[in-house]
Image (cartoon, rainbow, N blue to C red; front, side):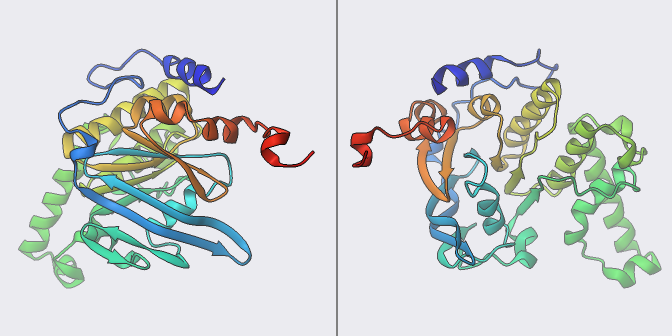
Length: 298
């Protein structure tokens, strides 16, 4: 049964790093999810590509300070949902409510001002730049001094550069990357590069962080570390996090609530315990065939 697999996966973790939570650590009870105001909501969102339906009438609500997981089999529409929220895809139907505003399509040019940041399934680092310079890229959308001030080295531009550098160094320290700040990002192990991408997304302290498979390709130890960093980001900065992740043990140990997609439709939504016991979820993951009586045919 899926329940047994989930329980075993949640236990299969490396020893915790000092100061960082483990995959199976419970969520603090100081801020019940049900009491948190909604930061992001999808209302009846549908997305198609030609004749292919990627999302069908999806409703989703994400409370402030929540870690919200989106799971489902391959091709279920998980990345499509993240791309709708980040404005890369325009839905054919429905509305997105984000930070108190309502959109038929989220404007990508306003993402930073709306307090949204994201990482991608595939690494999108500037591998020839240093770790510090990569993280500083996460602050470029908020630069106020302009090109003229930067070129002339005006005092306001110098002050802003110093502030940004201080913020980037603090984030590197937070994610245990300070000792690598002058290394070229492309020379570092894959798991470290994923952490650099997280640092770049977090450095502007967004209200909403979208993570598309943040632990894909990682070793068990790296997953354990990344899980702790994601939880710490929520607890330290109050960041609301929506993540796609295939490792069910990670999802069930880290998330406050889990939504399950299958063929573009939401088939379950609830706490990890509720979702892991849902028969529709078990069928979707294990490919269990319906009984002949249920199908109404031989």
